[in-house]
Image (cartoon, rainbow, N blue to C red; front, side, top):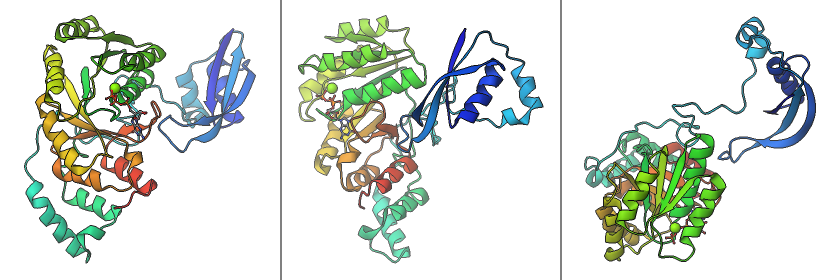
Length: 353
Ligand SMILES: Nc1nc2c(ncn2[C@@H]2O[C@H](COP(=O)(O)OP(=O)(O)OP(=O)(O)O)[C@@H](O)[C@H]2O)c(=O)[nH]1
Ligand SMILES: [Mg+2]
C-alpha cells in the first residue's frame, strides 16, 4: 500500500493530484483543515491536508501525461522542494539578494550622506526629520546604493555569532539552524563556547536535540579546533558565543582566542539588538572589531517604536546587515534584511520615522 499526504487548496486539487500521481485507484483516507504558507509567512491561508492511499501505484508517464493534458500542467505545487542551489526561504523567498560576496568596509559615503538627505528633503519640499518611511526608502534606493541593507554575505560553512549579552545570539542560531536543516536539508552542526552562563549549554543543546543536529561544547581554543574538526562532515556549522559587555575586553579577547583556533574561513556575525541606544551601538560596533565581524544581524526590531536606530546604523555602519529578527519564535521570526523586507516590516508594524 502506498500512502501519500498532500497539502492542497481544495479537495478537487487533491483528487486531481492523487489520481495523476498514484493512479485512478487512489482513495482518500483522511482530510483535515490546515494553514497553508511557509512558516515565515504571516498571512497563512486555509487549506486541506489530504491523505490518500492506493494498493499499487499505477502511475503513467507523468511528463507525457502533463504534456498531453494541459489540465495537469496547471497545477502548481504548493510546497516547492528545496533544490540544491537553494530555495532558501531566507535568501530566495520573496526577495533576491543583490550580491553575495564577502564584504569589506565600503567606500566612505558617510560624510556626504547628511548633505545628500538635506538636498533630497529640500527637493521634496520637506524638512529632513519629517520624511516618511516611503520617502526614506526612496532616498536609500536613489542615493544610498551602497548601504548595509543592499550588501549581503552568504552563510559560510562556519558561522559564528558574537555580541552583547541577551541580544538573541542563541535564539538566532536556533532560527538559522532550523531553517537550514528543515527547509534547506543541510546537515547542521552546533558548537557553543558559552560555558559561563548557567543554562546556556542546555539552551542550545535543547534546540540541537529537537533538530537532530550535532552539538558540541568547546571549553577552550584547543577544544574548539578539535570540535570543528569533529564536525567537519556537517554542511554548515553555527557557533554560539558567550554574551559580553562591549567594555569587557578580557572576555572579547577570550572569544577571539577561541575563534583564532579555527583554521578554516569563518563568517562572523555581530548580533545587535535594535533596542540599544545609539551611543552603545557605536561602542558595540567599535569594540567588537577585534573579532573581525563580517556582517550584522539585527534583533528585536519588534521591540522598538521607531526606525531611528536602524537609520543610524544605515548611516554609520560599514558592514552588511544580513538578517533581521522580529520576535522570539523559532524559526519564524527572521528574514534576510533586504531593503524591501525591512521597510515593509516597519510599515506593517507602524514604526514611526
Ligand atoms: N522580542 C524579541 N525577543 C528576542 C528576539 N531574539 C531573541 N529574543 C529573546 O531575547 C532573550 C535572549 O535571547 P538569547 O538568544 O538567549 O540571547 P543571547 O544573546 O544568546 O544571550 P546570552 O547568551 O545570555 O548573551 C530571549 O528571551 C529571546 O527569546 C527578537 O528578535 N525579538
Ligand atoms: Mg546565548
